[in-house]
Image (cartoon, rainbow, N blue to C red):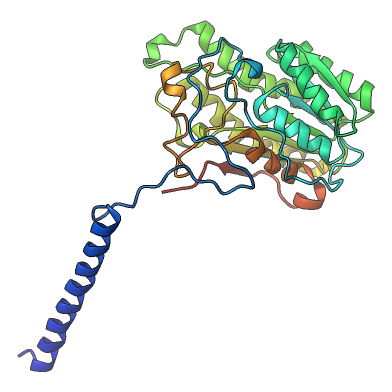
Length: 330
């Protein structure tokens, strides 16, 4: 037989549960949410200056020129103060003319590194980046060419060594992306361009650079959230970005005895020419709004992570890691 005291406690617990439920229901009504939901919010601004929550409706021709974007990507990072974390070092950055690559080049320069910028043929963008880098008081060279070509990657390494006498940091950032709604729409040429830009180019570059890199050097690869979660409309791109993450981890073990660290950064949506060159103009305006931050990142919000992973003073015990920067989690 159940004791009366036990029944009374059970009844009291039920009443307390209903009281809590009623309280939350009242709060939900007041905040305009339903049970299980959340109060809606606009774009989150957590930085030292305001970032756009909507972008211009622009579709760019590939490879995409930053100068053609009405809403200019923000790369200057005026609040970022350098402290010579990379003084005396030299960095080779592929895809360094615009987007994340440009922002990384500027912050590396602000930390004291000389910069070699590898890019395809976006000469106006590259010259603007060179000018921004040189304003930081360091040297900069421009290296146009297609990273899918082995000789181009080897030449970029040689010219960087000739100009600066060393390669201490390699940022493998060049990428090709083009959506396809059906797997049958991905032609052999399309597939080859994605594989060769995103994987072959990265392999050629690191293979050529590693013999010249001294202890304390760093290789940083630009992966993607698509390499973690996949994207049904970016099958080939997802394949390459997942491959980059695996290669970063494997290569980190391979070169560890040399004192070289290897890591990858996996960004979510970032406002760079890559994206408006791969989506209709009407989709570009809301790019990034599906993230918890409700907006795309700006390149200057991503670039400090590349400084962190390049600087021995910050990350000498960090290698083989994949760092997602995706604007939060629900």
